Length: 313
Image 1 (cartoon, helix red, strand yellow):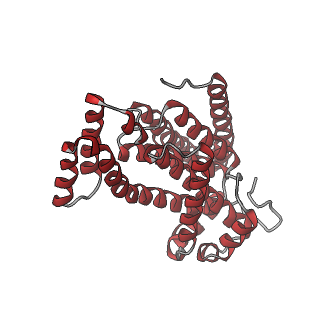
Image 2 (cartoon, one colour):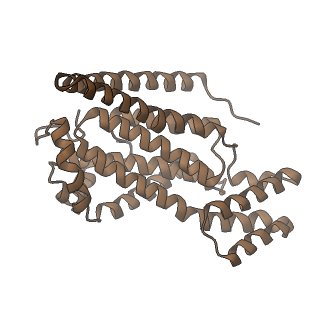
Image 3 (cartoon, one colour):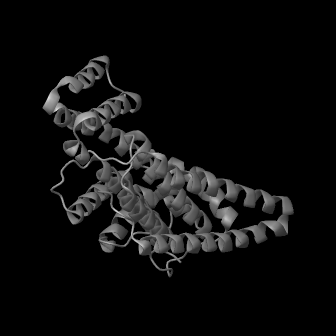
């Protein structure tokens, strides 16, 4: 039986979209006016660039997810007959297309299709083991980009567009790699999380801010940025938000353990996301930051100081 999307969920989603658009338009016009005082061509080019980024980075991945078939690994246990074999073959085909398997592994996973009642258990174990590193790499790289860009940008427009684009695109990439998407209710919840966290520029739920501030400012990332704690923490919180969204999406699709409650799944997702964030913060971002920090800060020209709130305004 299909679960229906609550009307209030849709209303909330639409409201957040409108708020996000209004905020983007307001901030974009502010930057456009500054550029227009220099050259009208610069202002036009800026508006065109914003339009392209919004369409390609937000609208396209947002809508594109809904074209994927609805499925998750836990449903494989309940499927039977032609539906069961259809999804088993689809999973095998998707693994071969998206994961770098050896010839022996391709033969092995294809052979699972002839194992009768054991097919789903064997396939789920193999699928989860092989697809998870690919998804983790995608989530890791996206969060790393969000960490640097949103901490360095020092501009609300870039932060919001960057967050929304990165997170919607990440959800779409996870769906493409897996070959299927969560149900409509789960997709709307993910989108609500993206939109709300984009507006807030950070996910505060369940976060130990004292620990996060310490990790952000004392990490090689914070030292490389040379920024005050407000900027370092803002980028770190945004990256953690992206990690949580990516991990939750992955767990929605790969969770074959139907005994786990939604609360347990969410707690597991947070723990995993925070663990990945710690690994990102240990990296040396010096060279990458140097390439983008000065040009971006000169362009937007808005400096933060130590009296600003931790997450910025």
